Image (cartoon, rainbow, N blue to C red; front, side, top):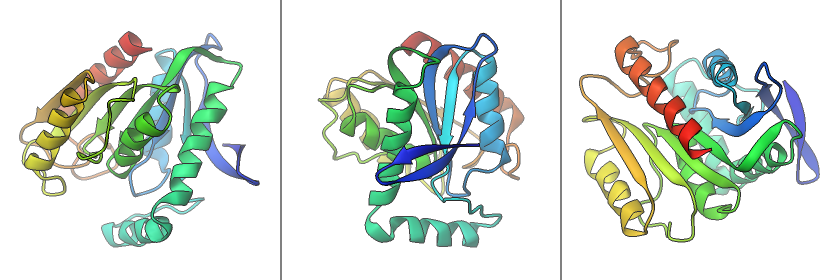
Length: 223
């Protein structure tokens, strides 16, 4: 874990470096559970693929084991309308952009569920920095203006997800394309929300393997 600046203070994050020491930068935004071992492992796997990866701890040290605990953490996170979390994510992007190990003109942002919302949001708020967005099950605002964004988008969604309505996902995909963005959305049938996360009962090995390969290929192509 490292500390990096945000405003007048600091925030913790997990930094993973590739064996060769340099590479494109990727920010990983955890789901509402917090920065648990799965998300750290995901960072390590991306680093093995040649990326410099940073996952900010948006819950500031707190980790949920149950849905109810996660709800409480998200409630606290959103008590200010998500302003603090947005600043934390922006600080992570700025830190990674300035890191000596990072190469390339832009970075990728990979968001899981709750983190997906902030990934989409940052592509609009920091268009010069965010070159690629990968969202796992989480959506962004389908009414936002993505026309000024410069990112390409990869959406990895569950078909008939109880947490994200199909119509909402379809609206987001249509809005991105209407605003001139390149967007590729996949729907995984027969799996559930959190299918990517090995520490969850919803984990599906086959779908996770396919989504992982699509993610790596996309990030290499975009960055």
